[in-house]
Image: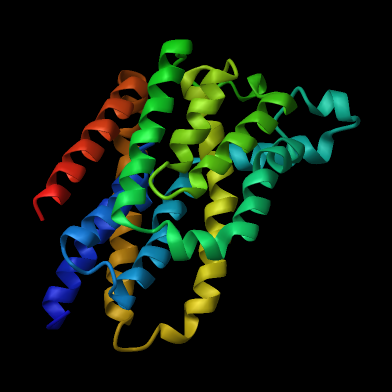
Length: 277
């Protein structure tokens, strides 16, 4: 990268992409891989570092959106008097079941994923496969309520969603895409599946990002700090604006099929472009 203004412009662009795609089941990692590849900066270490830290900006916006649900989950857990009674309200056990499979698989396969799956070809494959799953889920269950009914989430459904979340370890597949589709396939309505997926995303994205950030910490310097802060702040502001203004409207008016078709179309267009590059 060249001068400071170009760096900041690039940081804003990448922050915009992260902030928008983190809140939708379209794969933020897939879009970042595609964008950086097309710009010819996919091997730039500063860009790779921004991809990690900007997620914290976007996920912070989700944290503020779901703060009441998070507090209620803690209350439900503390007030639970038995395993069976606790199952009727969202509590820590739901999160353990929903997070454990992908957490274990992610820790075990992290080196392989980082070395072999972060490419333009694997990302477009993940986009297409995730899109097909979402179209199937949409066909299976089109039930949609105006507000999330988190009491619908059983331990069995949490476990199934957790297993399906392992698919999102493949870049481009999308954590939201896999878990929302799994929730719908398990019988949850669309809005409930979406909110529960957001709640699952908070600890797993934050944990994975902080682990990567810890190993990359020596790479953060005063020279690249403006670039990193600009991208992360942009991701936070954009995600916050979407979360507080249009997200509910998007969820109420858009189906999984729409996102699935978008993903398939994007994967097709990118692969056609690659043929002529």
